[in-house]
Amino acid sequence: MKDNEIRGLVLDWFYDRRRQQRWELPSAADIGSPSGVTDQNVVLICDQLGQHGLIDWKPIHQLGGVSFGHGKINANGVDVIEGTVTSPISISMDNSQNITISNSSNTAISGSNTQANTITIQDLISQIQNAEATWEEKEEAKGLLKRFLSHPLVASVSGSLVGLLD
Image 1: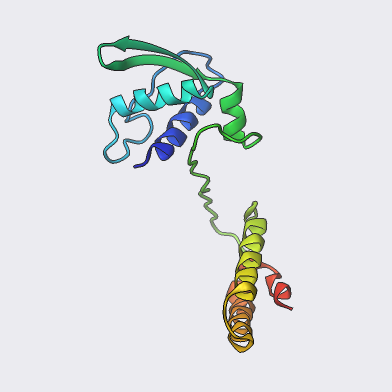
Image 2 (image 1 turned 60 degrees about the vertical axis):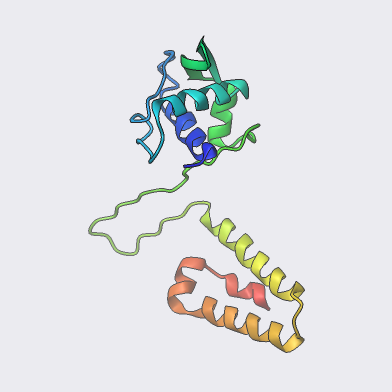
């Protein structure tokens, strides 16, 4: 697991405890015990988050570096988690959502995914138009994309993106 992913897990752990206002140190088990991540890795990540002003961090130094410490999230860290500011250090957040629906019909679930899909489709169209290919190849690619987006199942989850190809 990459450091930016561990940073996201640790910062999220502190965020979930922001109302407690206690100085704490998460363990690898507290953040889900990702493969290969040790408690010492978590301490080093906390030190990084503290250096970049996302948590208030009090390290305890021993020979060879930081071996322990405790911290709590601060306003900058909260703003990064909530997406109102950009992080000063690379952080990968898991923004997936789990939704369970039972015994329901005609249920619509929405989030920010429509805009992301529109941007992705627009980027794809732009890449096709700017590709080093013949006019015929570009038209064929746009036709295939339009046919894909027109499929009833794809259209039901992607909205009215077909109009972007006209």
